[in-house]
Length: 364
Image 1 (cartoon, rainbow, N blue to C red):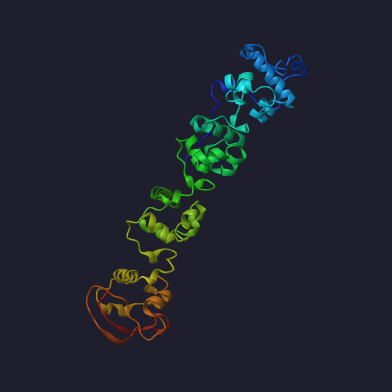
Image 2: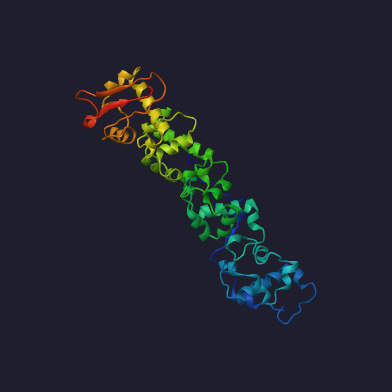
């Protein structure tokens, strides 16, 4: 994954504007020179058509509300104007109050709508506005490289005035927010602090992750996946994928590559209930016979404990009834035969002197 610097977009116009910060709004003398003709009311005809009159009202209102710094304007509400002789301005001049008023009266400043107590109607519906917010957020959080966005959390959005937008438009997922803002980047969702709730339920996402994981682990053949471990997934951001399959590596691999002929017993950790399935037992014994080159039933007299790929104690206990007097291997196709009272001899025989007392049915 090639890392790239983040290009925070500000635009040719807004890049020249001043940030809204601790600058003083105006001097006290400027306010004292304003004649508040709106207090006794009504104002003279066409009074509000003069832009300077509208600016004077806003300066007077801010001073009356105790606003002394530019950033104080973000606390301004419609109720403030309605309760201070300014209700008539909304309908004809500032329908999007307070944002419209501040943008008109202080056009040299870069106003960020998400800092107001209420954003303008429909603001978050516009994709450009959402992207503008994300670029501002990245700058605020100190993100300089594209990979820095993987650290973004929902809490970052909520604490920076975008909780509502995140819930409605991004389904409370930072991943969705970042991918909308930077659609041309090859995002690997598993690197985020938390993947979307339904991310692993999509087969395409699972396959994409597994292909990436295989590259990280140096896997070139299907058989290499038998060496995959829980630690491999956890080190490579795949722990949440394992949880979808009860933390089973074998179940995860087989679900992601369902068309492969998997031998479950070859995984580093086979499923705990593997030998409870009769068909799996048949499949294993047939595979083992082929692996050992057994062609006839007599060949099985040569079997040793070291020949079993799986833990022999577990296999014998569940499959053959290890520790009892009767052992019946599960067989399928091939040459039928019947052997009785034959002991597996030699120093390298199965543990605890296991006897093959009876074999009935077919050869594996």
